[in-house]
Image (cartoon, rainbow, N blue to C red; front, top):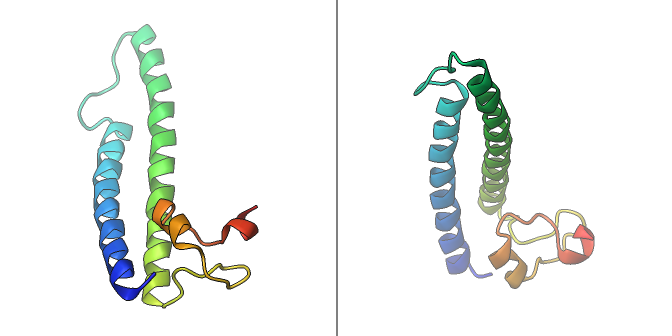
Length: 110
């Protein structure tokens, strides 16, 4: 990737990070029941607690995505973006377009 493409990708990563941060904020609100306290009916509480497990998994997934984006942005800053962290060979542009936070080439990822 050339510098211009990396700059565009960096902006896209920052935009995605902003979206994910908002999603994380909303998930945190749900986790802490800021909008609606736990229902008094025990059967409803059971359903709400099952939903809590789903929210927790979503929170974890979003947090991981933010971490991957932060790592990719750091590699861009350090001019290490686009190179495999294992073999140090260039990561194909097609892979980076599909998985912009990829740290390894396809060969090393296998």
